[in-house]
Length: 133
Ligand code: TYD
Image (cartoon, rainbow, N blue to C red; front, side, top):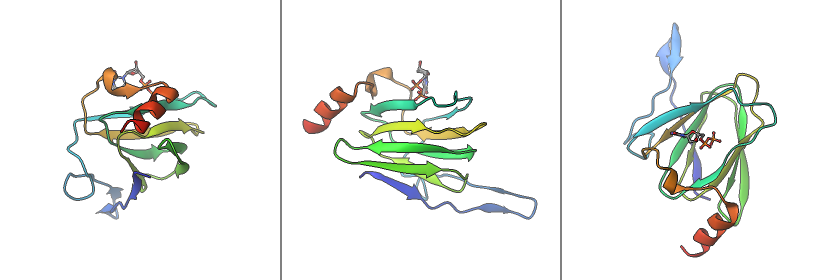
Protein backbone atom coordinates (compact mmCIF):
# COMPACT_ATOMS: atom_id res chain seq x y z
CA UNK A 1 0.00 0.00 0.00
CA UNK A 2 1.38 3.42 -0.98
CA UNK A 3 1.71 5.05 2.39
CA UNK A 4 4.49 5.30 4.95
CA UNK A 5 5.22 6.65 8.38
CA UNK A 6 7.86 9.37 8.04
CA UNK A 7 10.60 9.42 10.64
CA UNK A 8 10.57 12.81 12.31
CA UNK A 9 13.62 14.38 13.87
CA UNK A 10 12.82 16.54 16.87
CA UNK A 11 14.79 19.78 16.85
CA UNK A 12 15.04 22.47 19.49
CA UNK A 13 16.55 22.45 22.91
CA UNK A 14 15.55 22.48 26.58
CA UNK A 15 13.33 25.52 25.92
CA UNK A 16 11.09 23.58 23.52
CA UNK A 17 10.84 21.44 20.41
CA UNK A 18 10.00 21.70 16.73
CA UNK A 19 9.73 19.36 13.77
CA UNK A 20 10.40 20.49 10.22
CA UNK A 21 9.41 19.07 6.83
CA UNK A 22 11.56 19.94 3.88
CA UNK A 23 11.60 18.66 0.33
CA UNK A 24 14.70 16.57 -0.30
CA UNK A 25 15.02 15.41 3.29
CA UNK A 26 11.82 14.13 4.90
CA UNK A 27 9.18 15.50 2.50
CA UNK A 28 8.91 13.68 -0.85
CA UNK A 29 7.08 16.48 -2.68
CA UNK A 30 7.20 20.19 -3.38
CA UNK A 31 4.80 21.77 -0.89
CA UNK A 32 2.07 23.95 -2.45
CA UNK A 33 -0.66 24.03 0.20
CA UNK A 34 -1.24 23.41 3.85
CA UNK A 35 -4.45 23.29 5.85
CA UNK A 36 -5.60 21.97 9.18
CA UNK A 37 -8.69 20.10 10.24
CA UNK A 38 -10.11 21.01 13.64
CA UNK A 39 -13.36 21.27 15.62
CA UNK A 40 -14.50 17.93 14.24
CA UNK A 41 -17.88 16.99 15.65
CA UNK A 42 -17.72 13.78 17.75
CA UNK A 43 -18.43 10.62 15.72
CA UNK A 44 -18.08 12.51 12.45
CA UNK A 45 -15.98 11.03 9.62
CA UNK A 46 -13.87 13.47 7.59
CA UNK A 47 -12.17 12.87 4.26
CA UNK A 48 -14.10 10.12 2.46
CA UNK A 49 -12.41 10.84 -0.81
CA UNK A 50 -9.42 9.98 -3.00
CA UNK A 51 -7.28 12.40 -4.97
CA UNK A 52 -6.07 11.92 -8.52
CA UNK A 53 -3.03 14.19 -8.11
CA UNK A 54 -2.53 15.12 -4.45
CA UNK A 55 -0.07 13.47 -2.13
CA UNK A 56 -0.39 14.30 1.56
CA UNK A 57 1.47 14.35 4.83
CA UNK A 58 -0.83 14.21 7.89
CA UNK A 59 0.27 15.06 11.42
CA UNK A 60 -1.94 15.18 14.53
CA UNK A 61 -0.25 18.24 16.01
CA UNK A 62 -2.79 18.12 18.87
CA UNK A 63 -4.98 15.28 20.09
CA UNK A 64 -5.52 12.15 18.03
CA UNK A 65 -7.48 10.58 15.20
CA UNK A 66 -7.48 7.46 13.06
CA UNK A 67 -6.96 7.27 9.32
CA UNK A 68 -8.35 4.37 7.31
CA UNK A 69 -6.40 4.00 4.07
CA UNK A 70 -7.90 2.01 1.20
CA UNK A 71 -6.17 1.29 -2.13
CA UNK A 72 -9.18 -0.48 -3.61
CA UNK A 73 -7.87 -3.90 -2.57
CA UNK A 74 -6.72 -3.60 1.04
CA UNK A 75 -7.54 -1.37 3.97
CA UNK A 76 -5.22 -0.36 6.79
CA UNK A 77 -5.77 1.85 9.83
CA UNK A 78 -3.12 4.21 11.21
CA UNK A 79 -3.59 6.04 14.49
CA UNK A 80 -2.10 9.53 14.69
CA UNK A 81 -1.69 10.58 18.30
CA UNK A 82 1.53 12.55 18.58
CA UNK A 83 3.17 15.45 16.71
CA UNK A 84 6.18 13.12 16.29
CA UNK A 85 4.34 10.85 13.85
CA UNK A 86 3.78 11.90 10.24
CA UNK A 87 1.79 9.85 7.73
CA UNK A 88 2.64 10.12 4.02
CA UNK A 89 -0.17 9.18 1.58
CA UNK A 90 0.35 8.79 -2.15
CA UNK A 91 -2.29 9.87 -4.66
CA UNK A 92 -5.21 7.54 -5.48
CA UNK A 93 -5.81 6.30 -1.95
CA UNK A 94 -9.27 6.47 -0.40
CA UNK A 95 -9.05 7.98 3.11
CA UNK A 96 -11.42 8.23 6.03
CA UNK A 97 -10.39 10.24 9.11
CA UNK A 98 -12.40 9.46 12.22
CA UNK A 99 -12.30 9.00 16.00
CA UNK A 100 -11.10 12.59 16.45
CA UNK A 101 -10.36 13.40 20.07
CA UNK A 102 -11.62 16.58 21.66
CA UNK A 103 -9.38 19.45 20.48
CA UNK A 104 -7.71 17.34 17.76
CA UNK A 105 -5.89 19.37 15.11
CA UNK A 106 -4.78 17.48 12.03
CA UNK A 107 -2.18 19.33 9.97
CA UNK A 108 -2.11 18.47 6.26
CA UNK A 109 0.66 19.24 3.75
CA UNK A 110 0.19 18.63 0.04
CA UNK A 111 1.83 19.07 -3.36
CA UNK A 112 -1.18 20.66 -5.11
CA UNK A 113 -3.27 23.79 -5.16
CA UNK A 114 -6.89 23.09 -4.26
CA UNK A 115 -8.78 21.74 -7.26
CA UNK A 116 -12.14 20.08 -6.66
CA UNK A 117 -11.93 18.31 -10.03
CA UNK A 118 -9.07 16.09 -8.81
CA UNK A 119 -11.19 14.81 -5.90
CA UNK A 120 -13.04 11.51 -6.23
CA UNK A 121 -15.87 11.61 -3.69
CA UNK A 122 -17.73 8.53 -4.86
CA UNK A 123 -16.26 5.18 -3.76
CA UNK A 124 -17.54 3.23 -6.79
CA UNK A 125 -15.96 5.81 -9.10
CA UNK A 126 -12.68 5.39 -7.16
CA UNK A 127 -12.78 1.59 -7.68
CA UNK A 128 -13.49 2.08 -11.38
CA UNK A 129 -10.53 4.45 -11.84
CA UNK A 130 -8.18 2.16 -9.89
CA UNK A 131 -9.14 -0.78 -12.14
CA UNK A 132 -8.55 1.23 -15.31
CA UNK A 133 -5.06 2.32 -14.17
P1 TYD B 1 -13.41 18.61 2.42
O1 TYD B 1 -12.33 18.10 1.51
O2 TYD B 1 -14.77 18.04 2.20
O3 TYD B 1 -12.99 18.42 3.96
P2 TYD B 1 -12.73 17.10 4.82
O4 TYD B 1 -11.80 16.24 4.02
O5 TYD B 1 -12.12 17.60 6.08
O6 TYD B 1 -14.04 16.41 5.08
O7 TYD B 1 -13.43 20.19 2.32
C1 TYD B 1 -14.37 20.97 3.02
C2 TYD B 1 -14.63 22.24 2.22
O8 TYD B 1 -13.45 23.06 2.15
C3 TYD B 1 -15.06 21.95 0.79
O9 TYD B 1 -16.06 22.90 0.45
C4 TYD B 1 -13.82 22.25 -0.02
C5 TYD B 1 -13.10 23.31 0.79
N1 TYD B 1 -11.62 23.27 0.68
C6 TYD B 1 -10.94 24.32 0.09
O10 TYD B 1 -11.54 25.30 -0.39
N2 TYD B 1 -9.57 24.30 0.07
C7 TYD B 1 -8.86 23.27 0.58
O11 TYD B 1 -7.60 23.29 0.54
C8 TYD B 1 -9.57 22.16 1.16
C9 TYD B 1 -8.82 20.98 1.73
C10 TYD B 1 -10.96 22.20 1.20
